[in-house]
Image 1 (cartoon, one colour):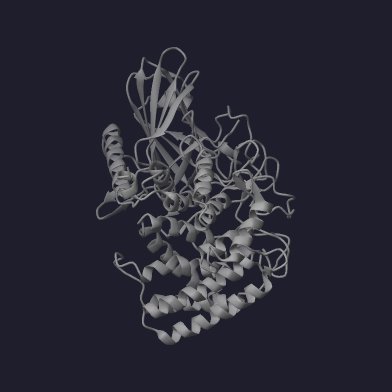
Image 2: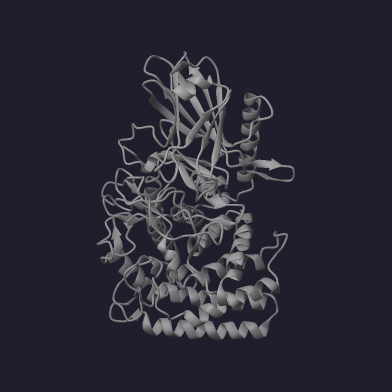
Length: 599
């Protein structure tokens, strides 16, 4: 049976999910949103069928351990064979500096070496095409196999006996064997030497990248693994950041809540930028603003969509993949996302928040200037004009629209931050203009979204519902954390949405029924709110319980079953990992207090 006990490798071009038994169960080519040539995660079988996977295991494989090699994106899996033999599989996607730029080919590298005895290795490479519907043409060569689909041709190059690989015949593993799966280009040097060189340089890249992070004193390993994973969810070529690496892992068992998250949501991307900025990894912000500039200039009047493909202009029409049964058979499997057709007015605030640090961070080689400010003003004009327009809201309701408090508050933050940026640039007249717009929006929100009888802000104007996004009102500065209105809202959220350590987004039935799993990032928002109002010990206790929900490699999906603790939803989920990073940086003791506590 498929589970989310998976590791992820990648290089900001492609990524792969690998099971505890060293099976590659998910990998899209030639980029993060491409055709999943390895798709057994959504095959719907019992997990034993190798179709749609890249399997390297001894006969009668017994998983022993799986871990990342230090602070890197290199994954090691140890397997035993039941007869005293054992082997280690090292998986990675090359990423390192070469010729003055980052080398990140659409390539997977696997090295298998015996660690005890002579285990008999069986290799099964069975990609699928067109979302599981077709089998690629297989063309063996002297030391390689080519897999030809309509749009992609992959070349598997190996120093293992090629006939054993193509015929899937077990053979004794006397020494290391190597596999490179990628573009249809033959290597120009010894495969073992090439793999060793790629591995060393990839390890060195990640070690250097992590060394430059400003991590908190506590929970360092959790933060580092989350940060590396966020980096793997960025499609560096365009600057887009995907919400997750998968499609259609259901939010709950049998719920039909299956969505394709391999796209760039403006909202989610801001949160990723915010988290990495807190750690000092600002290059993702710079790349993302390049992406935003590209999509904004293509939109009439700078009216942004909530979500874009990683290569702007590509089709995002939502359709069903008939060749895949779904995770544990729980379909449908979707390609594309109809959210691209929705109105979500918080996007303008999300983009401006993501860009704001550009105007203050003196480390940046190209800080924000008047030209960038003028581009952002075009987005601010949209925020000011649409602050009270009904939309689908942050939860992307498909069957109803309303004037959502969070969307209006994000329009407020767009205007408020533009005023601050204008003052920083010495543009006092523009600052006054944006202050006026921000105050106008604030006054209306306080009049229409405040329920005096219940002493709480509500999820939509003149409504009665509570949702978890209200916890972010203090986060974005709309209301101080100690303000009685926020304290009342926090109490209402606790009363209506909390289930043990978890928090639901909302509890009212939507288009797909009543939610039955908790949204992981909401618990981290709750942790942050508790810390902000002075309830730090409660916040730390819940944070520790959330850390315990990570899988064996420290990764999180989107949702969790509040009763069993099982992870559900697309994986790995950037929202959840962002929440982990932000909460850790806020709750951790300082380095001084940690190193030299008072006696």
